[in-house]
Image (cartoon, helix red, strand yellow):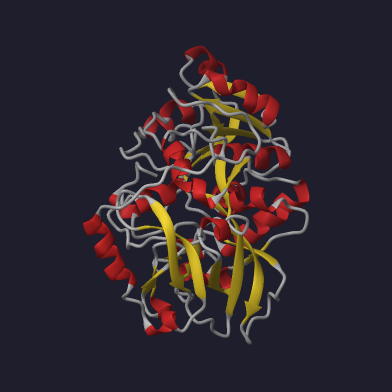
Length: 418
């Protein structure tokens, strides 16, 4: 996400993959481990004073709402620290959710460091939320107290435009991000995300988590999972026997491999790093592994794939990847390189090939994705941490040192972190 164009700042963001095993970064094995607390960090006195003043500017609606506790960034250092605030007063169609787990996405990193110039401090990050319903408004029909639910990248949209009418809220011009968005329907206050103990969300933007799914491994599916699942469904890259190429083996790529195999597809991971071959095939179940920098391997795979999901956010040539597609094959880009991707006409016209983009998924996409994940036992590979480790986790994330998603045990750590 650090490579995104400024034009993407105001709309739904693409979600970058992680590239574990990058040069100079340790490569932990798959599985779960709990980190040690991060070192104590303090804001400079002027920054603290400025943030304290802003924190006092709370709307009347917030003052009357439920007390909440989370961790927030106060300035572009991105350092997170304990933060008390209030959630808005629930309305008739709202659901109040106790947050159990929240994933850490690369988007969170860029927002807290103000990489896109739109941070509204104090920022409470987090948009891969799994929790339990603790209260519902009188008009809520889909949920009840005790239900296990999820909240993804956005918590609002206009509900009246063409995109919303077709169930594509993620492409609404008025979409409201779960964190650092502007909630015009509730006083225009900045939204605060899942690095907190409670959240209030309109029931339309809440999804049900199927029984049997591990909740910590489910959290990243609310963003990374739906970002790869929705274009696979839309472009027919879900049919048994088809051949899917997955470019990049990170937070998005590893989930795309799992979905592809669950669909019954042949899956080839395409990477610049030969060191990822073993985990791609033995740990994640990919059928083949292709080194994109090896001309002979690429030549041998020419014209063999029905579709490609490209999860890489660093700039890379796509013409060699398009050569891997069969005629009428489809490439879907879900990463966001900073420099324009070079697309010569000869790479797509003779074979009738297509290149499309995708940004997260709709509420319906997200619910369908979770149902599919529940049926096939799919979850992200995660490293579960406590909230007091979050600053160290952010530092490691910057170094691509995670297999493949950090997930915060919010309910299990916020009390002690206070």
